[in-house]
Length: 160
Image (cartoon, rainbow, N blue to C red; front, side, top):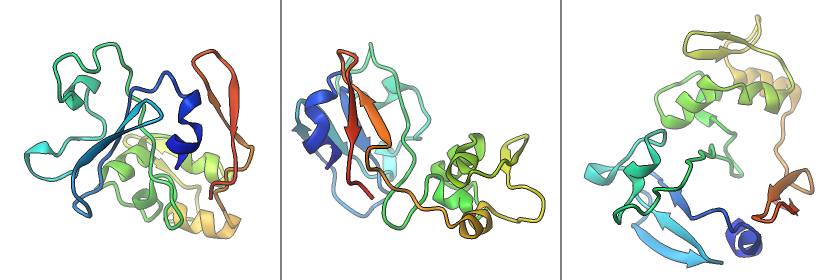
């Protein structure tokens, strides 16, 4: 995983929280000094992915000096904001995708922003159509850098 292979360089990351809907059980472990928490996003423990960082605390003042960064889904079958590629804002991924220009950055096609949506250009109903036409493919191989706590940039490699 990214934490296992690069965690030693990620000294400014206190916790990574993964919140699938209900596909797994909750657990926590420390990877290279970083808390890795899996919390199903259901029931009373379910939390918005865009809430205040202190709302994620499980111990008092756990994240008091932290800043929240949200990373949108990316795996072998998803694109960042994957639901929004199909035009849906019904999930946090869709809301995040709609609120940013991530679709433009992935497809290299400029869209247009209206209240609550970053829309594809005229002639497209969804960003999925744009991505297919542009043959968008996400690959990390020396094209993403992570800054260490000392400011050294580390290349992420061979992730797709």
